Amino acid sequence: MKKVLVTGAAGTIGINVIKFLLIEGKYEITALDLRNNKSFRRLKKYRERINIIYGDVADIILMRALIKDHDIVIHLAGVMPPFADIRDDICRIIDYEGTVNVVDSIVKNNKKCYLIYPSTTVLYGKCFDVVNVNDEVKVSKTDLYATYKLEAENYIKEKLNHYTIYRIPGLLCDLKKENPMYNTPINSKVELISVNDVAYALVKSIDFKNKINKNTYILSGGKNCRIKFKNYLIKILKNYGISIRFLLSWFMVDKNFYGSYYEENELEDFLNYQQMTCKEYFDNLAKNKKMIRIVPRILAIPFILLLKRREK
Image (tube, rainbow, N blue to C red; front, side, top):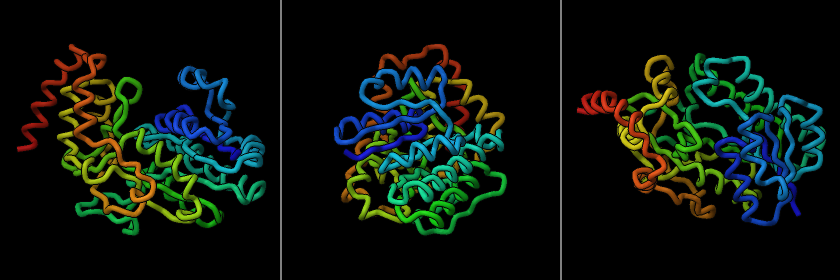
């Protein structure tokens, strides 16, 4: 039985990766995350089916011990924007130095270990055409999140012989559990992907690791997940209402989580991961009675009207 280590296992994608690994039923799973109320609550229901370790990817001794005993690492530990751009120190320690620890541990302790690394499509910067994975990256020096992701990618490519890198765009997430991305430029066109589809693709990648080894892909939702970002915002505000995170992003945070449309690649042909469309996502959101938040939806009306005026 192959042993899989998932870092950042209690995060948005990580907890769904655990779910799909268990559905596969052919892996011994170790979940690694920092211990806090959120991670403890999310992981405790799996404690009889997986190995749970609370620790830090920045701990090189811990990482060497774990990777020595695992065949596959799905490395999800990281800091997301906008927090990543506010705290340079934490972003560098977790996103870059944590990845260096994972890579160095593979090199020194388990060279056959296969690394699956989710990166970001933000690396392409402001794009107005359909983006191909091989297009030039355009990372601003002020975009710390993208800067450290690119540095981590380069380190992986330089040091490892067994890896796959996925550049992932904005996520369609469960709003009861996660905060959506708000810091994308209003007039952007975006191609999104559901959290479930990302997690499923990462897990299915293990079956095709020889085929996709040493390659970089854009892991996106396809043509049925394309939308203008301001239309996405309007739908979120109509169905979910306003939130503190939205207000902070609207007034205080740089809009540097750039989006675009992406050229189709061979991934869908064999992973068959693109299940959720934007229409299905928003239809489900509108039907979910648990998402009814009367006051936040009323408070969102001025922002919806402002967005609609910008649309004209």
